[in-house]
Length: 110
Image (cartoon, rainbow, N blue to C red; front, side, top):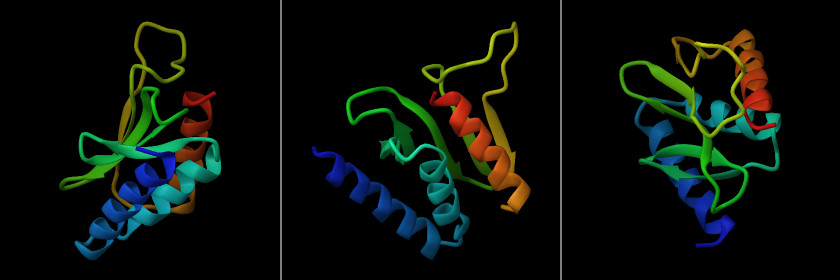
């Protein structure tokens, strides 16, 4: 699959999210890509995931069950230390949350 086809699949998934009561999906998608425009979006376990290339490991992702989950994978650039935060629940997408997600994406995908 081409990067364009992979991105189209993610766009379709986000459209499904939006119509099923998860309009914040569009904002999160745009936030991730604004934080690192070189990322390649693709579906990862059925949710939007973002990697450095179409064939490389997914570095960050989001989904919604009851709450919105945003996470980074073990393939991301992780901070040194014996314990590392890797997933966050988002209860409301505010400007503060957007800034925080942007910072996480920039650090995790460096």
